[in-house]
Amino acid sequence: MRLHARLIFLLILGFILNAIIQPALAFNALPPMPSPILELQELQRASEHSPPSLRQPPIADATVDRYLLHPLGDVEGLLLTDGLQMHVTARAAHELVAMIQPGDRVQVHGRRLFPLPVVQADVIVNVTDGRSLMVPFRLDRPIPPSERRQILKVMTVRGSIQVLLYDHLKRVVNGAVLSDGTQVRLPPDVGDGFRVSLQQHEEVEVEGYGTETQYGRALEATAIGRRGAPLTHLDASIQQLR
Image (cartoon, rainbow, N blue to C red; front, side, top):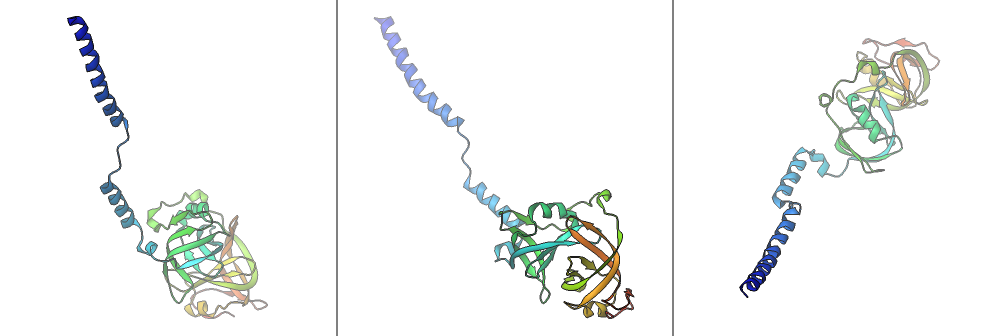
């Protein structure tokens, strides 16, 4: 009888221990529940690193017409179909072309540089696929390898001025998009009067040095003139389109 009673006691004890240990093991195997405090801290950190303009309505909402190009062939911004233009450092060109292509609709958060059709972009949202690009500062990205540079070649182009392009820092005209799609950039030392004299729909002929890539054709002008007139070589003394 004593042996029988001991066996019954051990069985009961085993059931009790199993009932206690199994739930405890199962509870320990569960992933830790996220802390509301930690989640709030993560949201606060994300908010601190986001530009204030992201919390405001977009200042531009339009379709991308084309990439803005440097005469060396680098992509350095966007031109929208409504005429707005924005600069993105050429050091981030690969990020820009990977996320945004001509034909995509974008919304831009940043600042409008009135009265110019220029946007200083903080974030560009690709409405077409939902991706977004936080526009980096120039020094946030390394200098691209020199072997990626295109070789400049002599170019002569003709067409009417469709869009005037602006230097986003100096806020002056620094080029134009012609009717054939070529992007013409002015040399930095050209006179201010000459910049002002350029007008939309003016028929011009331009000589310079530039490149042609899959993204388009761009050159820096060395001489320019109205179509049919002699070309004028550009320098600081030239104050008007002839």
